[in-house]
Image (cartoon, rainbow, N blue to C red; front, top):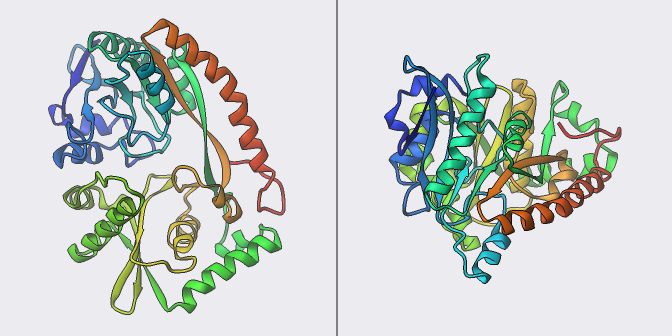
Length: 382
């Protein structure tokens, strides 16, 4: 086996990378990650320098890979380590650069160790992780982070000495609903009534919602959607890192995995939501609106997605990071995972101690929120 680092995915064929992606995960597809590179959504400007790891056999066949980036900040990660960076600063030590295995600007769980079906899978995983640890030292990085990992990936990562960290999101699970009303019938009367009221408010406002695939949206519609996406960041004081050409490229290359919700008032588009889908899961990602319309966010970002999942037989809906308000609308707390390794022995021990105390607190938080389930019968998250 030979490990090779890539400063661009363009250095290998798309077919080899995509052959390692499970469940058709849209964010791990070569087309998504390479479009980020083509349109400078990653790079010096945003502080995400590609440093992808690949593992080849002697015949040049790709056996494994890991999306990896040199980070000069902690933006767009959604596993917050600002406190760790501040502790380094107070001690006169640089926290950046660091190495991060993640999907830029995307808090969605998925493979971070992309492995070909083979009896060598454990050895390939170990080789990738060991090389990442080696790169961390040789590049002068403070630390190595694997974010939103699958439970399957955590085993090899912990075996190499990385430290586990838990987070919490809110996901919707489809046990096989016949339609949206069938879903509503499983909720308590109060929650069912509230969802019906919110949907009715959108209808009464005279708003029309249009569902489109990425391939179906016109250039004008994509311009509107991108403007909505940017408006959310501008309103919150953030920086919109995804460009219109990026969205246009992925619409052309993988538009069948992009779901768009456009809200119109008469002939004018007033809001939009952008989601992605795998073979089993819908991922809500971006939203924006021209003005404040009562309950339109819930309709465009949650209820339309739930309805779509039911009609198309998708098993899960992950609407993004944070948001306890999602519970009353059918989403339940689910633990997410990450793994971390710090070069500095003292800080590694301090972070390990912090995580030993943080982990039960996160578990308690998820359990407490689960007690506020909107369902008539108690159920756990997916």
